[in-house]
Every structure is written in structure tokens, then in C-alpha cells.
Length: 239
Figure 1 (cartoon, rainbow, N blue to C red):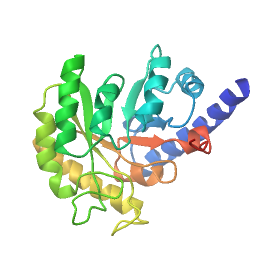
Figure 2 (spheres, rainbow, N blue to C red):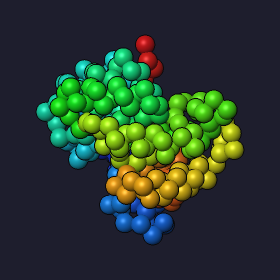
Figure 3 (cartoon, rainbow, N blue to C red):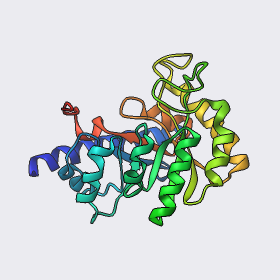
């Protein structure tokens, strides 16, 4: 465990240096960017190490893995973010531990999230996942709502009991006009965030950037970056 803590601490320090350098290059203050460590596929023991090192935000993407992990770590001062595509039959479980769902992308999901948040007596923060690769179907390869659908979905979230509209999230697309252009993709997300905040001023969170492209996200103006591999190492294979 000591060796693992040393490894994670060293990786975390390197990521912190990257974020600080990116903020300096962009003329931003370091405190403007929040690090979310993506702990999917890693054990609860790693989450405990991260908490001990001062990390306060962790993210998961599969309820069957994250629910027991969150329960095991419920004594820690952590905010849990759900970042994966969320099926409606998993919402009740996810609402039990997630403080924020970053992958809200359709009205049916909003309805179920609202119902379960009210039932649990909780307020759940929501980010709309934006699909910058959305084709004629209006959805992206990895989920998400097309830019043209943001306004309607945002209004729905904002008017739903138990939910709080916090902002936007995206993943750099693998296809379409933004493929291989993460900086351009994140700048587009910032433009969409500006539009959103005209109607919903408090929805100022912008979650973008991962291990490979966090610098581009910070340069574009992201408020949160989601980093897994650069902190915790190469992911173990899922069974």
C-alpha cells in the first residue's frame, strides 16, 4: 500500500504541475480549474489514497462498479461524479451516491433522475453531455445531445424538482469535424456554455479534457478536467 501511495502521489503531483502550467499559459488562476480523478476500474483502496492526498472529486462510469465502491468510501469527504452513459434502470442506484451526473443527454433520463432525486430527498447536479459529433440522429457516438438540443434540455433540467443545472460536459470526438482537434472542440463547448449562461447564469461548469488533452481544455476555459490514467496508471482490464 505504501508503494501504491507513493506512486499515486508522484503521478498526482505531475498532473497538478501540468494543470498549473496550463493555467499560467492561459493567464488563468490555478483555482479556476478543478481536478476530478476518474477512478473507474480502480479499487476503493485507491480512492482512499486519493482522499488522503487531498483529492475531493472522483468520477465513475459504471454503476455496478461504482455503487459498492462509493458505499465502501462513504466516510470520505468526496464528491462523486457519474460520467458514463446512464441507463434509466440504474438511476435509482446512482442517485444514492452521485452528487453530480455529467452525462445527462435526453428528456427521459431527466424525468427519471428528477423522480428518484425527489424520492431520495436529494438535489443532484446535472451537466448536459454535448455531442460535438452528433449526426442526423441527434446523438453522438458516445452519447450526448446535439448542440441544437441544449436549450430545450437545459430548460427541462432547470425546471425539474430535485435537479440542479450546473453546466456542460463533452468528450473530444473521435469522428466528425472535431476529430483530432480537441482544442477546437473545447472552444466550441465554451461558446455553447456562453449561450447557456444567458438563460441560466448559474450553469457555469464546463467539464472537458482528460489525461491526453487537459492542456487544451484549460486553454479553452474548462472549469473541470477529468483525469484517470495520468494519476492512477494504465487501467486494469475489465473482466
